[in-house]
Each structure stands twice: as C-alpha cells, then as structure tokens.
Length: 189
Image: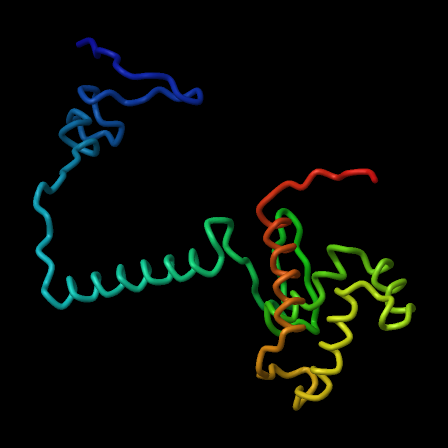
C-alpha cells in the first residue's frame, strides 16, 4: 500500500494532508479524525436583554469617542496614568512622570518648564515682574492663586478658572499637543 504525500513544508515539519493517515495512529484519514472541523452556519439568537446591553455599550463607546474627539481633536489620545504614586504622561515617544502630579492638569502646569526649558524660566523669574515674559507673569499669578485656593497641599483641589490660569494651561496644552502629535523640526536662530 502506498501513501500519497500531500502537504507543504513549514519550519522544517511536514504538514499533514487531509487524505493522509491521522498521526494519532487511529488508522483513519486525517480529515475524518483530528482534522475534522465543524462550523456552525447558525447565528446565535440574542435575547432582547443582551441586545439592549450591547446597544447601550456601543452607544457608550461612541459617546466616549465623540467626547474625546471634541476635547482632543483627531490627534493621538492623551495617555496619562497613575502608577505606584507617579503620574505618568506620554508625550510623543517620551514618558514624563512625577510624584507631585496628581492629575493631567498638574502635569500641564509643569509642562511649559519642560517644553521651554527650566533655565529660560529661571532667568525670567530673576527679572522684575514688569520685565518678565508674559508666560512668567501668568506663572506668578498662578502661584499666588494656588496658594490662596489650595486647601490641602498634595491633594486635588477645585477652583474657578481665571484668565491667567486659562492662558497658561491653554499654552501648555497646545505645546503638549504639538509635541505629542508632530515631529517638530529644530531651528537654529
């Protein structure tokens, strides 16, 4: 008795053909033994409760997607998480983290320093208030505002938005979006 060999070699092993004897030793053809596959053509009937739950979950996911698109545009989503007491934020291909950041907004308050360089900010703060760059004037207002409004240092607080806070956070967020979504070219001045 001769056995026809069917199959394709993959990674040094011969594939068992449908009409070959099953390697289990049953004496049956592979297609009638371990190679037998059954597929159900029937679509399962879902109960009205499961259909309602699926529809609700799909609506919830769509609402989250629309809210994210409205808040963040079409760029990469904000990637921010708390891990072992550290707030971690992805910016492009980099990860920034700090134990003092409790929220993404805390990160934004520091991100201008990261984006523009601490040395520049330190030089500006040494100047008289009227001579400082407007960003550092906003920063001065924010520091005073936080001292007056933060009830318990290290805890998340709530306060009304002011012009300086909005301007500072808006700039920080825009710098973050640029760095998170684009590869910026460096320019020499």
